[in-house]
Figure 1 (tube, rainbow, N blue to C red):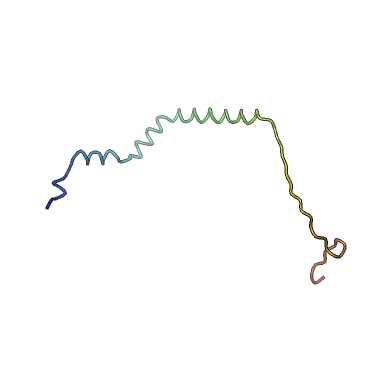
Figure 2 (cartoon, rainbow, N blue to C red; figure 1 turned 90 degrees about the horizontal axis):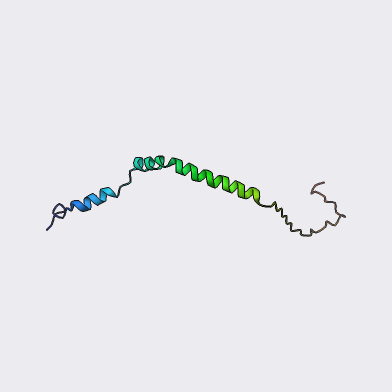
Length: 82
C-alpha cells in the first residue's frame, strides 16, 4: 500500500504552480504595452478610413415585383361589414 505523500514530486508540484495565470500580472503586461496597442489601433483606423474614402461610390438597388390579383369591384376594395 502506498501513500500519496510517498509519491510526492516537488518538481511536478512546482510545474503546477507555474501553470496558474495571475490576472494582475497579465493586466500589468498589457498596461506596459498600451502605447503599442494604441498606436497599432490608430494606424489601422486611419488606414481603413483612407481606404474607404478612396473607393468609388457604387450604388445598387434591386426590386422584385410580383403581380397581385385585382378585386372584382374594379380595383376598389370593400371592407367586411361596410
